[in-house]
Amino acid sequence: MSISPLAGKPAPESILANVPRLVTDYFALEPDPASATERVAFGTSGHRGSSLACSFNEAHIAAITQIRNPGSVGRLFFERKVAEGKTKKEAVRALKRRISDAVYRQLLLDAAR
Image (cartoon, rainbow, N blue to C red; front, side, top):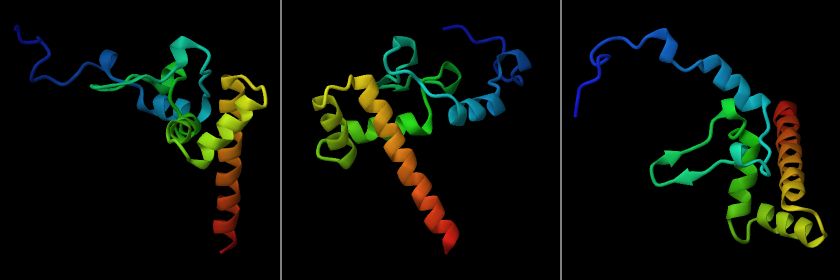
């Protein structure tokens, strides 16, 4: 195994991640679960998504976490929407709206205290 010529040196600007853009995209962009390039894939060695690729944000993580937990309120909501004839993509979108509504209601309650 050869040693990288960058070993022991500060990383050049050209290979550094644009952290402000990552943070902005994390909160602003919404992935399309129907698009293979925007799907989050988890494996044994870590996360495969990126907010820069529109495959990783809070709403998406919350919805997918709920869907993956059998018996959770989110999973039951998702299954009900699919049973009503919605596509999986539409059901995920509806769950994201439901979660964001719940977060907003909690923010209002917290602000009123």
